[in-house]
Image (tube, rainbow, N blue to C red):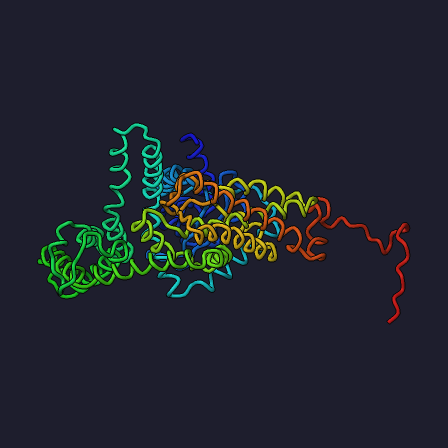
Length: 512
């Protein structure tokens, strides 16, 4: 997408979210433009959904630190969002610095019934999800989401390097690619510490400094109460805990340290106290927790892979709805740090395959509903690439039963992949974030690449097929088909009054 198109997309979005003065903060993750708003009522949801570049909208929970309404997320897709966000930020700044102008009016867009249902469901879910535990999960997710682009880039380079090594090609390049792919992962704890302090209101560089202790080679010389420490022990979990401790120590220091000494005393005590606790406690505890996560994941799939895959694949879409999927992000990152890949992500990706199969079935079951079929056609390409929000909130969830049958498809695909783990063909993703077809370049495992790719592709096909069949035959009641399989453009308030029509047959009398 060219710069002009990126700026045009940003310019189209801005008035539909209330203009520059309604924006409190701007950020983006891998697929979404994330903005916090001053007034939610100024957002024109249907007009946003109608923009060609917008794949969907998602409402986040909780109010931002700066006040106002919670986070509003506009799904633009990978790559696009990273290019549109800077243009959007520039337009917001320009709009704030310019003299106030009249708000532009947009053409009225008729709200689709299913889109209204989806918005209502999201609003209700938002209210139910605003719990302290789920808000904490969201903050933890905010620590890891900015790391996803680097994880993806390094993961793909690692896969390319492995392919060159297996084929014996370009031996002089292999060490260079290995260094490029591994450099970030060797210091990921530092980035986690930095983001943790930033998210929880501390000084980011102090969080990074404390977390850097974990990966420092010299920790191997420290005798922590008779326990042998290893560089990297505790990994991202230890870094998260260490940086969180640093935030609380820093805030405590600022309550009593005189302002004249703050610049010297507070950083020193923060790093010293948090560092000692990290070395003589947190590293060991986090190391045990990380090892337990890896052991549990291996045992889960090696002992009951098919059943575990069925449960994980079938429940992932509901977990996304409830916001609980964010608890898996540190687990994925820990597994990648330990083994080089997370075995859970390819199984969870099957939920998206079930969703795609269900959407295709809805398309064929409702041949007269041109509006819904157009929505499905526009959202399917993103669905195949693992971006499921448009299909979830625009199709399956508002319909109800197709959401359940989509979960059945995800369960079948997960069971297929899990079965091969149980048979000894273990593999996973070297990064988190992508799903669907976009996950192929990130797959790695114990077997050769061909077998790994074939099993993952087979799982996707099973998810598509079972999601389609389950939805086609069980996704609709007769009443649902009667209500939905119509053309909204020709069926609204145009039905003839058969009671007064001279050609209407007399009604049959039914005795009481």
